[in-house]
Each structure stands twice: as C-alpha cells, then as structure tokens.
Amino acid sequence: MAKAAPARPVKRPPLMDRRNSSVDALADELGAVAGALRGGVTPSVGVVLGSDAGIVENFALALRASNLPLTPLIEPLPTVRRYRGRFAPSPTGPLHAGSLVAALASWLDARAHDGAWLLRMEDIDPPREVSGAAPDILATLADFGMTSDEPVLRQSTRSGAYAEALARLESAGLAYGCGCTRTEIAAAALARGLAPGVYPGTCRAGARGPARAMRFNVDDAVISFDDRWHGQVVQRLACEVGDFVVRRADGLWAYQLAVVVDDAAQGITDVVRGADLLDNTPRQILLQRALRLPTPRYLHVPVVLSDAGEKLSKQTGARALDRAAPLQELERAWQHLGFPRLGADDLAAFHRHAVAAWKARWVPRIALSS
Ligand SMILES: [Zn+2]
Image 1 (cartoon, rainbow, N blue to C red):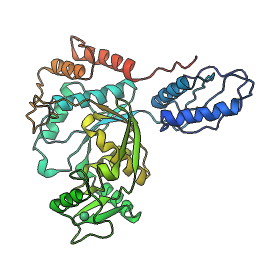
Image 2 (image 1 turned 180 degrees about the horizontal axis):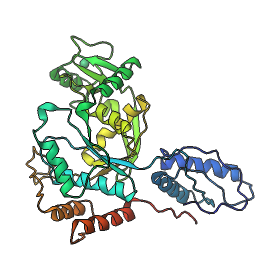
Image 3 (image 1 turned 60 degrees about the vertical axis):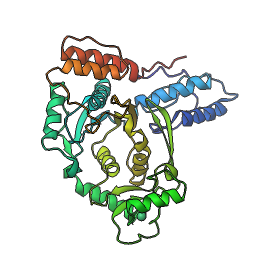
Image 4 (image 1 turned 180 degrees about the vertical axis):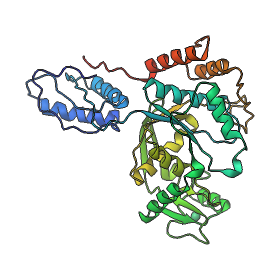
C-alpha cells in the first residue's frame, strides 16, 4: 500500500487523521506544503495520511489539481477502522425493488471493501409497522444471498440510548420543547417567507403552551459534505429545514436522532442508501457533531421511481419482490445502479462478478506516483 519513500524526505508533516478532509481542505494543505518547499531541495515529500480509501482518493484528486511535484507516502493510521456498512429497512411492508437497490448497493460496497455488513430494523414507528414484515424482509434478503454479519439491531430496543442522547442535547442547550401545532408551523413559515414545513424556531425561547415535540436548534448551521455519488452537498439548515424534531409529539423517537445514535453504536464507517435521504444527511451530521460522534462517509444511490415518477414505496404501489426469482430481481437492481447486465448463471456468480465490478468503480486504487 505504501509508496517508496523519497530518498531524503524533507521534514514530514505530523501524523494527522485526515479521514474527514474534503478535496478543498487537502488542496489548501498542499498549498501550504508547496509554500514550505519553495526554494527547497527535493521535489518530493512524504505526506502521512490515513489509509482510508476515501481520503486517499480525495488526496489524489487534490494532488493532481495542484500540479505539485510531490510523491505522497501513504501510511495507515494506527486507529484506522475497518469498513462497517449497514442496511436499515423499516418493517412497513415487504422488500420492494427500491429497497433492494439500497440493500444491494450497501452490501456490495461492504464486500468490495472487505468490510462488515450489518442489518438494522428501523422499527421505531409501531403505528406504521406491518405485522410479519420484519422477518419477511430478513428472509427475502437471505434468499438473495445477503445476511447480516452480526446480530440484527432492532431500534425498538434502543429507547434508552435515544433518551440519553436527547438528555445530552438538552443539557447542552441544543434541544427544546415545542408546543406548536401543524397549522401554527405552516402559518409561521408563510409569514417569514420560508418553504412549507420549515420550522422557524418559534419556541426556541420557550414553548407557547404545553411542549409536544422536542426540536434541535440548528442556529445558523451550514453543513457541507462530500457524497461519493453526488459530490459536494451544501445545506443551510435554518432556511431549508429549520429546527427539526428529535422526539415526536406522539412521544416516538424521530428517525434523525435514532439513525445517528445507532450508526455510532454500530461503528458504521460507511452509509450507502437511497438518494431520498440525501437531504437528511446534513441534519444527521449536525447531530453527530453535537453529540461528538464520528461522521461516516456517505454514498447515496439513485432511488427507483414509480410509473408516476414518485419514489417507489408501498404507498406508491411497489410490488413485493419475487423471492422465487432472486437472480432476475438482483439483475434489475444492478442495472438500476448503472451497470450493464451481468447475465450470471447463479447467485454466487452474480455476487462474485458484481463485487468485482463495484470494486473497480467505487473502491479507488492507490496509484499516486506521477
Ligand atoms: Zn414551537
């Protein structure tokens, strides 16, 4: 993995964890290195980085753009964590073509990184739950050759962890009770020229009437992150989302809080899921920062649309997958992810070829010598 070190390396930068560095941040850093080198003797420099694939890829991009005569030396960090990905379905119905795309992409990415793939059942919304859906989803995934490497985590067992996280947010002054009704929120948003549903922080200074939901104060946060599929994503939370709910008025835990707490508890390094959750990610990153939890890498794959152009879901009439024809279903999901048909004869062959092709596209090779 490591490139040969330059014969006489100039002064090495300190060992730093740059796993969350963006291309821009690395370009700045390279500029600083170039400044230090100006008038120097050697045209190459040892740069110590984490061996994480994403950061190596970002570094390669920044280096190429910089045109500097530098030869990076890639060294693994002592604390580099092994890849851990997950698929987190809600038991609101059987797995359909849309959820299979997300499941397959996350499974392939984990396998292509020689990592672990975990399953999490997002069963925190009992009113929406369909009896028998959870075991049915797990059995379907197993028929398709995808099983969790560790025991399935059920969000219904995690209330204590969510309550503890909310208590931390409250004691940090970041969460507050909100007594507004839907009608009041809509009226307040309209009055301030905000998009419908954007909560303008009416109850920040104290709930008018009994507090129903708990909200996170986004203040003036602007969150930017590099999505592996979509590139840089920027969101101004105050005008695009507003103070969002972390515990619902009906007492149930909000998805945003639960997913952040559980991604951290399961040591998830990489989130691969449908692009319908792309605009949720800044809220999750903000919560990770507030709770001092690590931010995983994100890859949001295209969602499957219904004939009417809506995201495929049980509500838009998605049919259950044909468990008797896993190869055909997997081929369809695979092509939706932008790959040509594999035409594999059996499940094992499909998985083998798909992992290899996924790896070639999504796992950067380390070839940085100029
Ligand atoms: Zn309110």
